[in-house]
Length: 77
Image 1 (cartoon, rainbow, N blue to C red):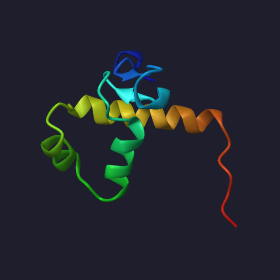
Image 2 (tube, rainbow, N blue to C red):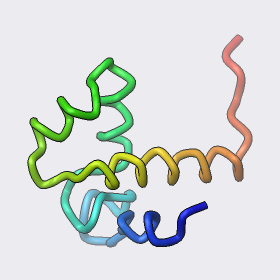
Image 3 (cartoon, rainbow, N blue to C red):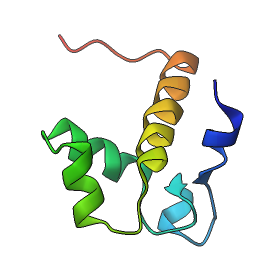
Image 4 (tube, one colour):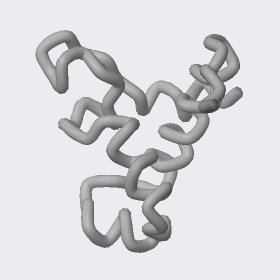
């Protein structure tokens, strides 16, 4: 776990409904993950969202991994 990297993830009650975001921007962790899951490369994400940095993408992935480790995910039937 990279504590410095995870500091890039912010949660503010008045932004995006209190969902985790990237460095105070209105870019949710889930937005970054959905882009990657849909097949976008890191380079495409960074080009399309010029305020993002590669470390932000790593932070989103690491944050999500830590969340999944805490809560069981229901299996689809």
